[in-house]
Amino acid sequence: MIFSVRKFLAPLALAASVLPAAAHAGWPEKPVTIIVPWAAGGSTDILARLLSEHMTQSLGQPVVVENRSGASGNIGSAQVARAEPDGYTLLVGSMSTHTMNQAMYSNMPFDGVKDFTPIAELALVTNTMVINPSLPVKNVAEFIEYAKARPEKIAYASAGAGSTNHLSAALFEKATGIRMLHVPYRGGAPAVMDTVADRTQLLFSAGTQTLPHVQVGKLKLLAVTESRRSPLLPDVPTVAETLPGYELAVWYGAFGPAGMDPALVQRLNKEINQVLAKPEVIKKMGDMGVEVMQTTPAQFADTLARDADKYGKLVRDLGITLQ
Image (tube, rainbow, N blue to C red; front, side, top):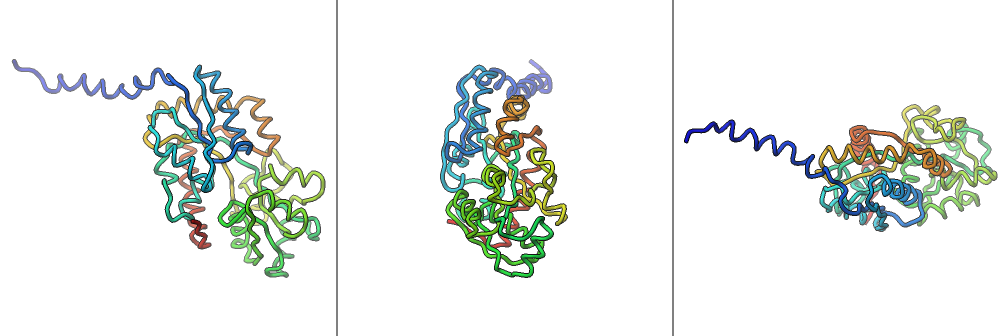
């Protein structure tokens, strides 16, 4: 019997093309897990639990948050990198884990870009530049002039070498040519408290930590570090208004393992963006100094690649290494 190979193969090719969509047509058919690679109670965890609550309702399956903290976010993130790319194991991660750790740790268990599928940029954490009120300056320009006249006399606090606090200040030093004294702490809370106490004079840190002290006059807010003014603080200038090109944006993002089906990624992106558009979610996160976002997977992938290159280079230039 003579038959056409082309006619025989055509149905197989068609079946193969629709297989991924068909395979995910019933998703989710079981509970979905969101891994948070940080301890419970922080802004990343709160955001993940808001997603969990609302997505459980819209998807009709439990969406469960698990905290897997340790190694600056590497432990929980590595678990997601090793998972099946089927949409049942997701990650709410941060800019530091995916764009900075690769350059700081010699034995990384994953590649922050290559081993993940970007789903949605979730939020920007308003990153503030604050000083102790004892400094006789009112803005960024005056601070630069004051610090230049006192090399290595101004101490800035951080949550440790390689933290976003540290990189914000190091980037500021590089852009201005000033030299300051770095005082690393074991976490953000003591860094804030010693700046309040005037044991250190400068801190770049999330508004979630600094703004309560600004409101009662214990810290003075000079600027935010994003490329544009925060809608949460519209009257506060950016550092870039004084130092063009300066930017350090601290974001949270939703990821899956590498190799996820694009149709499933688009479905998740839509579900997540619907949650982030809810007024109660916008208000709850905004009250914490966190601005929720609306992005496509492609937009988030571009941000991820750009920041991995930018901050990875900065970390290497500064020679920061961690074990």
